[in-house]
Image (cartoon, rainbow, N blue to C red; front, side, top):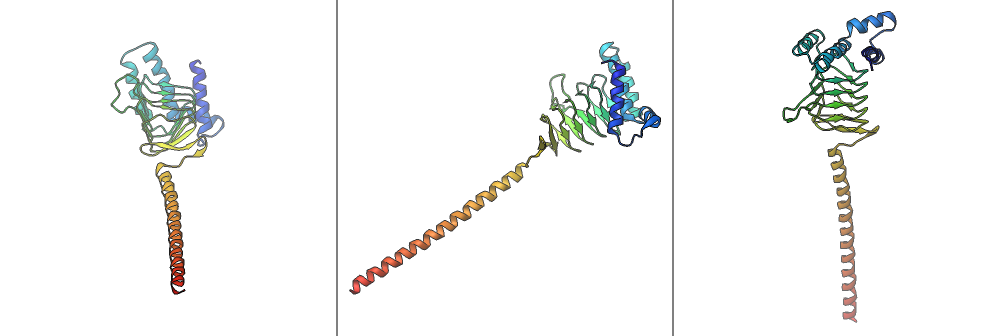
Length: 232
């Protein structure tokens, strides 16, 4: 896809996913002039071309610093960004060198696509597949893969792969919804098992009491019969 068509997809993504953008000519100029996320992505496409295709040293990194100063978003020149990517508010977003951001991904402010510091290979940043949504302040660290249409809750720390169509949240992040269905947390599952065991124990106690009562009754009945025989 040509650079112009890609920018058009980026523009459409902002118009579609940012409810604050009005329609008409005003909306057009607000996207171009007043939306730092769009500006950061558009500038990155040129910087990435200089860095990867033309292999120009230093200049892409310097331009990246200028873009960070202007938009508040830091995208390494080596990062691969798909079409239709929307960075809302943009402030504090960091995207590492080997990160891959797929088509139609949405990132909110404060998102980090970074490394853990323990990686031994060049690929040390995450891969986000098509349609991923990442809430504000989320950290996705290491060479993990976030599957298609997955959702990352605000403030989450993701250290493992995320399945497609799943929602994760927490520190560290865990799956809370999958394919639209709620996934019970481990503690809740453990509590349910404990309650089931308690119910079984109560039933066993009741059975023991019934057996004791039956045993006492049988002994009493036997004792009474023996006494009658003795009297006779």
